[in-house]
Amino acid sequence: MPELPDVEVYRKEAEKCKNSGIERIVVNDARFVKNSEIELNKNFQGKHFKQIMRRGKYLFLSAEKGASIVLHFGMTGDLSYLKASEKELKYTQCCFMFKNKHNLHVISKRKLGYIEMTDDVEGYIKKKDLGTDALEMNRNDFVSVMKSKKSMIKTVLTDQSTISGIGNEYADEILYQAKVHPRESTERISEKEMNKIYDVMNEIFKTAIKKDADISKLPDGYLLPVREKGNNCPGCKGKLEITKISGRTTYYCPSCQKSPDK
Ligand SMILES: [Zn+2]
Image 1 (cartoon, rainbow, N blue to C red):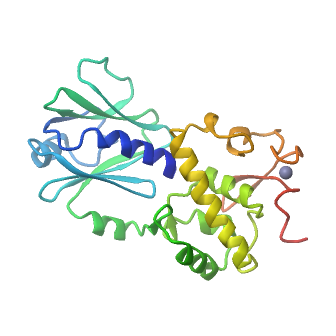
Image 2 (cartoon, rainbow, N blue to C red):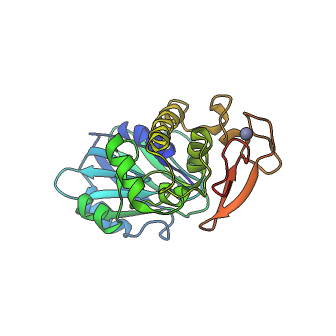
């Protein structure tokens, strides 16, 4: 599932189409797009995307005078801005064609994401109950919002209404690097440890974005490149453990992240 770093990489890709005249929008799979092709063209043809904004895992492409495109990516989403002469992509579900002979392809192999139109980005964010973006949240707000939740830290970190952008996999990385057990209650986590979680979260996201959100390029010592059954902790070399938290598969190191029961 694309998380904050992936969608930030898509945002940078989408920036390339900013201010180019929109010639036409082609919908290849109507199940992926909540508005009709006719409706999209009526609202965006001849306009330009003036603002590209990310909030958590959502991307907003806003044209002048009102309408915006909302992009939400499923398991295998991607975004590519290519010359129109380049080969058609296999899994393009929707294509924005620009007058400068470039196309922005919204790619989704399993069609689990979606595209829709909104006239009110702020209202949309409110309706989806999206909290402050993880990279926008300041330290004091982070510590106080986390402490106020009184639940397992992994559940709180992945709750998009509390803080938006952290998904299942990066939550494991953050807690692994902060040496905090994913089941630990936020009430029991000290202020010092919360500050540590905040620092590693920022460091991990910035590093991942620099590496184009490619997990295989993350530095040695990161959990994500080895986050698979049977693998060892990059730190202590002990076996990683797998558990379910709020229904989501969770990896952690039982030696480096001590259990709240001990
Ligand atoms: Zn370990």
